[in-house]
Length: 436
Image (cartoon, rainbow, N blue to C red; front, side, top):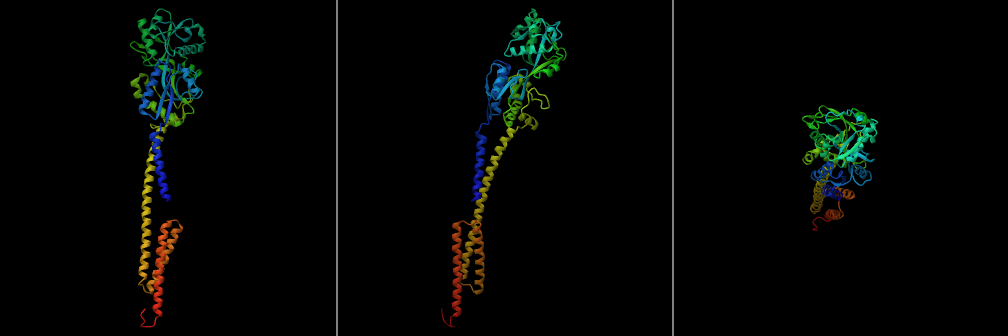
């Protein structure tokens, strides 16, 4: 009975595990989509679409925010589960890095033969900033750089223009430089170089920021970057040699309260979907894993991502799915196997009981014609069988209805032996020649 109950329980557990695996969506997460109309918004949209195909158990729902600062606040206030932020802006206090989505160079572009050879030489001049969703944030970058070299921000003028008009503004001396923040590759910086080169009929130059490493130490949201020759233009090359500048990173971040398994699953989705995302936007080429060896990261890396990056290709989240699925199968098989074994055990026990019954009946039949010696042997065998049956009954290995049948057969055999002994005793006492 116990074996049957255990078998049924295991089968039920297996069924529940299978239902959990196939029927439950593991997570439905809200993610900020970046400023409307931005390249980052397109990347997040591609990420959401690709994730729906390759990892439907982690569903992403985009939430539109007006700015990167608003995205950070949304995560800090718990209105979203994931956010896209930029490293130079105030990060959410509860944020931890899942992935680096993009690295943007802070490119200070100068027309040919410009007298500006350092950040300090921008004082008294005007800088053109390309129009776009992050124009206000980019203007603050300029303030930070000027402040580092003790140039008052108010001493440098700014004009915000569409990229197509940037070159003409510089050519007409309305601006002495262009501040373009964008990736190495297609983006704002590349477009600004093209516009400046067309207007000036010559290759612009990229101002070297030799203080980049020190700036990064004072302002952790910035990092030093070496811009290779030809990064923004192939012929003539812009820059014409490798140039040191500063960069900022766009990061996908999650709240520190997000479970490790879930953070690992998101990281794995982002990194493995990179080829799919490239088909939607070339910016996906810059997606990279955060550096787990960095002792002073801009933002701490989520522990689940660290575990995933250290464990290889399969995330703990996917492993847990596999364990649940395989475990369900194993439990179901174990339950079925136990049920079969219980049935076989029941048959063996029934066969044992039938064998006992047949022997008790055989003893009763043999007693009817047995001699004194044979009768003694049958009596000893009956005693042994009765003792064995009583032991099984005491251990609960014989059901009540079965015990009643065995007890009746034993009593029948005992009466048969007793009756034969009585008949033999009468025969021994009768006079010779008397017919009984």
